[in-house]
Length: 377
Image (cartoon, rainbow, N blue to C red; front, top):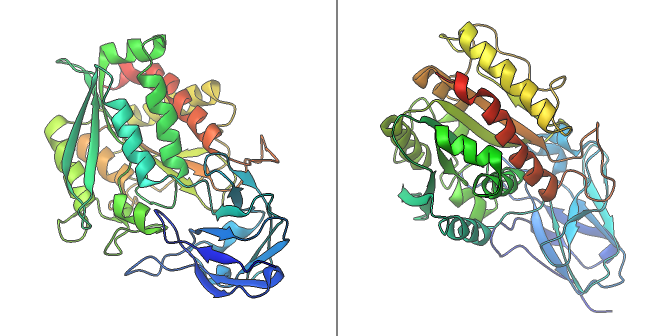
């Protein structure tokens, strides 16, 4: 029998091999984000495994950042790193146990379908070929990677719409969402996109955390900062990604902001708004409700019954992007969350929540933006 080789030494990879001598009792750990205690994202490849039943124990699952996320969760696998499918997984309260018999000699396993930095660069390179797109490098991350911004459309007197994704690098569904959003927004045959661009300029950051993405982190950047807790006082030493983007927002102004994420535990797509900010108004409440109802109509994958509890008045965490931007710019500002698991309301036994469904939800958000675009100011 060919001996197994297990590696995560590639873009976005994360695993520590404890013991791989017995294919039916492989022992693994998930590495923590550098300089922080966060961990849950895993991504690795197994070679020498064709036709061999594998049982892989992720031994430290119970100590991960969101252990409840393992309940009713199934890992994803791929042979070509393009098409991802779910495999049998079980959480016993201590370990996540993944069982699979590969059909090819090399197979990849991950927490969710990965979105590599190479694919990110491909996305930016594709987008810039549109005549209505201007690319800008806002500056560098701590690891020296570029912070990419896409400006879509132009003209004076238009609404300024900001859409950002993947502050938490392990939430890869956020950049898959961004693909679907950009593909539709840049489609000249789409009437919703055409009409939106008559009224708005879009500023899009497809990946807020390049360093964490490449390093295989769950939630933090190269120095262990959770970027979605840095919006009150970002710094060039700790959170240059947020500082660069917020400075650009101050330059352009913000009439609409959407921050795209994934949630480990909840098997739903939902939106969290900024109800708890000091200056919450009836206008912002109405805008939020109108957006939610329009997105329900645009996508049966979206719902409003389940999500995070609303903050009480004045109790918002002002270090979080959505609250900080709503207060700073008096604008409609929201966080969109997608599941790592499947959706309870519309399950897919083979893929669960997937890149393709994330892309479709990204495209559907154009309808919701279109529904409120004339109400923003």
